[in-house]
Image: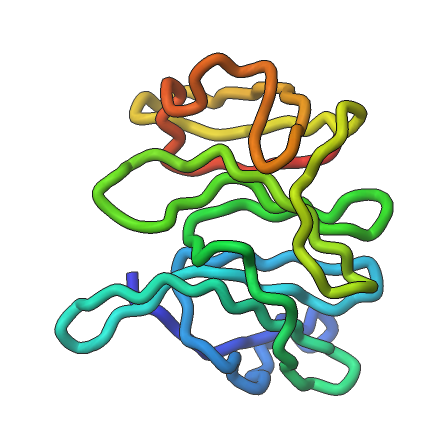
Length: 173
C-alpha cells in the first residue's frame, strides 16, 4: 500500500468525514492508539520513494484533537512496521512485535512500554503483565495466545516465529 500523511476524523453527528492537519511523516504499516487523555499516538510504519526504496520509521507523533495539532513524541527503540500497540489500564502503551525489514515474513517478539508522562519507551519487564495475542497465519485461523511479558521479549511461547503471524493485535488481560 501507499504511505499517506493525510488524516480525517469521522463526525457522527453530521455523518461526514472532516479533514484534519496532515501527519509530519507519510506512513503505511504503522499503529495508532488512543491515549487515556484522548490524544492519539501514531508510531512507526514505512514509506517509499518513487523508486520503491523503503524507509522504515522509528518516529512517533501525537495528535491532539482539542488543538487539532500534531507533535513529535518519543521515537521507538527500533524502526518498526506492522507492530501492534494497545493502551493499558495504567495509561502506558504496550508495543508488541513488528518487523524491521525484509525478507523476513515474521514479526519479531519485541515488547516495550511507553511511559506517556516521561515520553520514554522502556523494555516491558514484569511477570505480572499478561497479554492476549490475537492473529492469523497463512491459514485463515484465528489464534489467541496468552503470554507473559518479559524484558523486550515474550515468555510462554517456545517459538514465536512458528506462529508466522501475518497480522496480529495485543490487549492487556
